[in-house]
Each structure stands twice: as structure tokens, then as C-alpha cells.
Image (cartoon, rainbow, N blue to C red):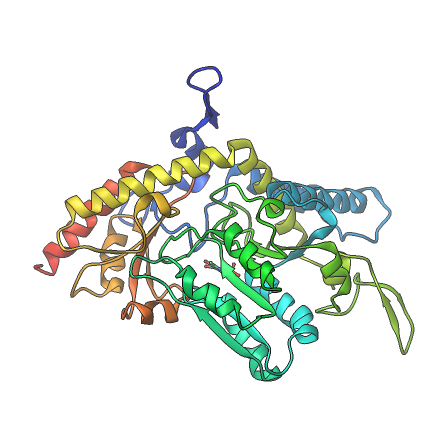
Length: 420
Ligand SMILES: Cc1ncc(COP(=O)(O)O)c(C=O)c1O
């Protein structure tokens, strides 16, 4: 929980106290080593508040939503809808009905690509993306433009992992229909200037979709202040359960969009040959959703807001600064990709020259240190830097500087084993 050092001073995050909320952090690996979890960008650990919220649904009021009129069914519906309100508050959405629950960020982007995209993208239309997109914010648009005979253009990036805004400005002269970009890069850690990018897109007449999968868990996000049209994120990266996620979009956009999936719950009335659809957001929530996961995501949103997103951001900025300095000082030859620490989220991708990142990750694992190795679903970005793969350490509210020290020690051991 945050603590206030002096009256009026901003609350700081006390990661040591936060760690007590995460039961998995008291486990050890098969060699008896404590868990040093540095893979939060892949998925975050879950605090007790989330675990208990999911458990309460399963043990106390497990029933379907939006249909039963008995006590536990009403309880399930109100918990599910309360989760929607919490999720809306987390991103300062003006109206909880603009929050559509989905399984993850990938599903949210596909929803927009199929529903909005198929109605609004036609032959010769352009969609602008960036070279740093996760495959989730690339492949759905590739499929769409292939089907519709449209075009994709890409904002290139500088050698230190930032978007080249002068090229973006030029691309906007093509009058794209949509600009879609990540808020925070899951490989480089770059925090993009989302408000500026959005203003520029709007001035050129484009709508904007922002992939907030690596932003919502780590910094204050205000969709109204950003001015976005679509904003997507996953529950499992923000301390919530897998199978939970959200699409936020302006109400008039959602109302004009056709359903993505069809079936129960998304209808108002059904006849043999025609149906009328439900209001937003239910129009986009066909079938029984992952009720307990969304309830858990609501608990995660409350937990994060309880910590304070400014405090979370400060904590992770300090960790990024510490990690870059420590790794550069203590691990000879290490190559770190992306911008300097102040401009990045809690993500550090690196390589030890001549050693495959899979070997790095495997050796670190013996000491309980978990990092990701591979292309992190950003193959074009790796191509941009002429890399086959990288290792990546990523932080969260429970991460400690000592864990970065453990990473540095482990990396020195890797170098020793490979005689580098
Ligand atoms: C920036 C970014 N976008 C989208 C995704 C996709 O998230 P999910 O797999 O939860 O749909 C990820 C996951 O790593 C990501 O980092």
C-alpha cells in the first residue's frame, strides 16, 4: 500500500508491503530458490484481492448473469457490472456502458477490425500503424486490408526506439481512415506520446485505436484526456485473471458498429428470420462471458487505484533507471534496446552478444529468475533492429531492486559459463 512520508507529499509505493499481497511470491522453485519474477509484461502475478474475488464468485454465487432472478444470479450480475464500473474508473471512461468486456486485448482489436473495420475500410483506404506493434495490433489489420484491398503504412522508429514523428506527419497526408499504435512498447518499453499522436490523427480526419496492454497496468491512463476513439487492454497484465479484458470506445462509435459475435445476451428480440440487437455494451458480449475473470479484473482495477497509478509509475520508473544503470555497470558487453530509462516503462530488453536469449533464460531459471526470451510477438520490430531474439526483464508493483541485482548476478554467471 502507498505510504505518505510527509503530510501533503505524494504517496509512494511500498513494494515490500505490496509483495505480501501476492501469495505466489512466497513460493520457491525446484532448486529451492525464491521466485524472482521479471516477466510481468507477459502476464502479471495476482494479488490476494483478485484471487479472493474469483473464489467468492465460484464458492458463493456461481451463476449466470443478466438472466436469473434468484438471489445468487442477481449477485453475479451486480458483481459483473460493478467490475465494469471499476474498469471504467481506471481509465476515466465517461460512461461504464462504453466498456465492452472481452477476453484480452487481442480480442478487443479483432472486434474493432471486424466490426468497425469491415464497415469503414474499403478499397484504397489506408491504416497507419507503427513498426513497434505487437502482432495483436498488426495481424488483424493485415487481414482486413487484404480482404478490402486497402493499404497499411508504418511509422518508422529511431535507433533509440522512438516513433519518427516527422514521417508520421507525412503519412497523415495520405488521409488514413485509422491510426493504431501501442501506448507502451512491450519490447522497447517506449512510452509513446499518445495525446500528440491522437491530435495529429484527428486533425487529418483519422480515428485512433490505442493498444494499452502495457500501459493500463503501469501508469495513469485517461482516455478522455488522450482523446482516443478506441482503447484496448488485457486484465491478466494488470494483476487480473487470464480471460479478462476490455475495449473502451466512444458510445457513438459502438452504437454505429455491427455486432462482432452473435448469439445469446447480445439481442433484444429474436424471430426466426431477424433479430434486434441489445444496447451497448451488451451488443458486443454474445454468449456467457468469463464472469469470474471479469469480476477479478474489477478487483484488480480497484487494487491498482488503491495503490495509486502515479505511485505505480514512479516505482516502475525508478526500477527502470536502476535496471539500466546496474546492468550496464555490472554485466560487461550487455546490449540494451530502447530509449533511456526516463522515457520508458518497466521493460528492459537486452542481449549478451554471442549467447542466445533462450540459453540466457534457461540458466537464469536455475536461480529462480524468470525472464522472457524470444521475439515477444514483435517480429517486425526485431527485424528493424536486425535481431533474431532478445531477452526481456519486465517489472510490476511487486518488483524490487534486489531482483534486478539477482538478474545482474545471473547474467554474469551466464557470461562465465559461455566464457565471454
Ligand atoms: C503491447 C501489447 N499488445 C497486445 C498484447 C496482447 O495481449 P493479449 O495476449 O492479452 O491479448 C500484448 C501482450 O503481450 C502486448 O504486450
